Length: 363
Image (cartoon, rainbow, N blue to C red; front, side):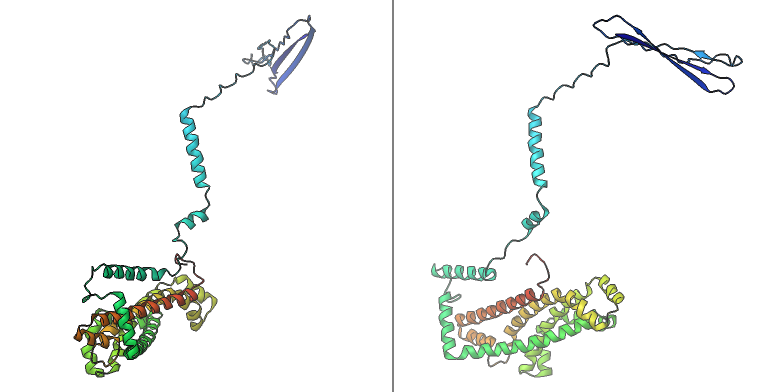
């Protein structure tokens, strides 16, 4: 084996102030032995010498002898505890919960699949409770007849020919009143919702009319239009146009102004702006008002047909009141309810077809 000695000497030249380094390696044979000895000697200046002499010499000897760098001790292995196991289980459960896709979470928050004939479940349950209570003797037959009694009375009135005439008369009155009210509500809402001048002239008047009880206008309309069919249709039209106007006007006012700016940038005309932006944006509110208007037409018809009428469901119920026939009154109420449910379902079906492009909770 050999012992190597390295000596490094640094001298500073006074003229150039440039350090000069000399490295000398000396190798000498050493007797063979079981260990290896390495000796390193470095000479490094520790302090400058006299500047006038122009030379400076400093030496530092560092000699180390060994067999090589010692290996670092290995860290102790972690010891698993009961708390660590519980934390690992909890972390695994959290990771499973957060790995659930957003689509599955949204699907869980939705109302779910639509039930078949869901709107008939409530009325069917009501009729079942009515039948059970009547069969158990919990209801007075004179005040609330049983369902089979009402069905029997309906069959007698239909075979006599009085019920078909009354139904057709009521449908005609409700249809005329609803048509005039729908037209008035849509025209006034468009004029008020698309123009500041129209809003100033129309909206305040409609709000004032809404605050006045519509049925309180009956005596005044009888004096103006007579006791015939005209005032009945006029009252129905007033009752219908108010909810249609309110909902359509609110929908028009709620259209985002950015769509208006986009239409102006695209250079759309007034007609195209109404057809392509206003109408699609206001359709949801319009259908809400339409449903309320359909229901309001049947509600007002019950009262109007009891005032100087010779036919109609309301007239039939008024005559049954004079004779104490509660079964006939219930026949009229059930027919009104069926008409209201069918008309509302028809409007909802049209709404679903027209607004099929929307993705809502109901869809």
